[in-house]
Image (cartoon, rainbow, N blue to C red; front, side, top):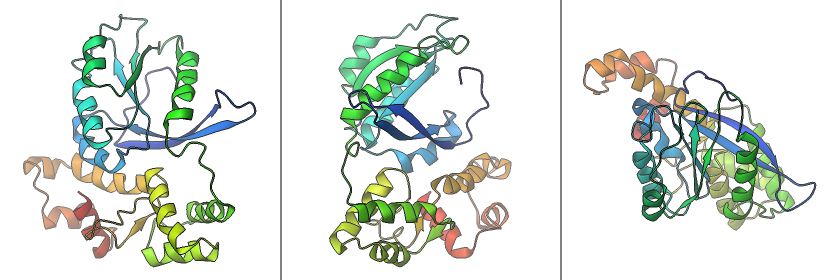
Length: 263
C-alpha cells in the first residue's frame, strides 16, 4: 500500500507472492519481515538477520538519507548477513528527489544490488520495484528453487500448522520422524526452517536450544513490551525481576528465562 501506514511495532510478518521472472507459471513466495525503524526496536532485529535473506532498505526522501540512518542499517546488515543482497528504496520521491551518495554507498557496501524510487501517493515505481525484487530474489536467495524431498515438505507443513507457540526440540524431531525425514535430514531441515523465518531454533546455542519457537512474531511482542515500558525506560533500561513479573505475567517461568536469554 502506497499510503501513510501505522508505525510498525517491532516486526510484522506476511507472505508476498510474485511471478517468477524466468519460469512461466511459477510463483515465488517470500516471507516478508517488516522491521520497525525506530531505535527502540533495534534489539529485536538481531534474531532475524540471516544470510538467506534479501534486504529491502526503505528510506524517506522527504527527510533525507541521514535521518533515515542508511549507514547504520547497512552496517548492521553487513555485520550479521554479509552475503545477503540489499536493495535501497527511496520512498516519497514525488515530494522530494532522492539525493543519495550512490557511488560511495556502492563502494562501501558491495552487497547493494540497485537503487529504486517509488511514490507513496501515486504508486509510481511500485510495479518496477516488484519486478526488481523478483529478479533479485530468484537467483540470489540460497533456498530459492531448492528441491525438497516430499517428506521434508510434509514435515515442514505439519510444523507450520501446529497451533502451539512453542514446542520442545524432541517434539520437533518426532514430527519429522513421523513424516519419514532421515536423521541427517532433520538437522538440515531444522536449520532451513530457522533461516526461512518459519521457526526460531538456536540449536547451536546451549542456553537457547531447549525451546523451538513456532511463532517468531510472538517473541517480538513480548520483547516489545519491555522496550516500550515507561518503567524500564525510567530505570535507564535496567530490566528488573519486578518488571519481568509485571510485563510477562502471562508467561510461565521457563519461558521468561528463555526470553531473557534471547535478549
